[in-house]
Image (cartoon, rainbow, N blue to C red; front, side, top):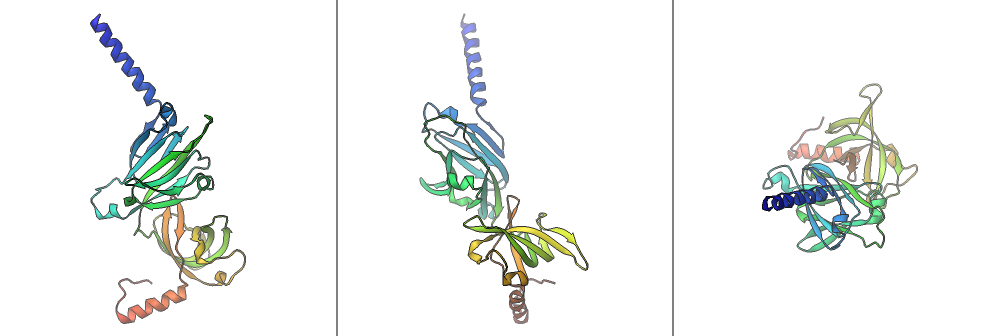
Length: 270
């Protein structure tokens, strides 16, 4: 009888493990869970650890909150890991929770529900802390999913240097940036295929799309900027090219040549 009780106890434990395991799945890069496990105590906070350069998170029926700890797949004491930023892109149907950066009990809003619906990409310095994903209060149990992709990028990793002109502003429905179509006469460096070769005589042309901050002052329609050549530098985040305000190429050349004469220029550009 005692052996039967022991076997029954083990069987019940196994069933409980299967039931709880069915609520989530996880590996080093991705996590998928359900807020239904928080239904009876909606203030529960679950810790999630992701140790990968990129991946995804999907939280079904968000209830309570989860803390997402993003860790690089490298020596955490190394200099490279201290310069990392994490970038998040919400899925088109992401809703039901807000995303904060949390450190020492303080929260900074990173992605509101409205920004998730608009597909905003947001980045933060990894040393700021963990992500605190807090579910909004709902009376019904409708199907909601909070989901996003993430990628860890080095703050000092410039992944492209190109010379070219801006052909058109394709989108300006974001309060912070626009999508610009760029035609390049020269690609000095790129790690990913952001700019594709379009053919042509001589060197040919390269084309690509980039995000540019609104503060750079670009306007829809025709402008003098279409007749200028610029030197573009920036980084690729979640497959999209992000740009800072680009200097005119002729202005860059003046500074570059002056530094050459002064012997203070550490690099050479052909």
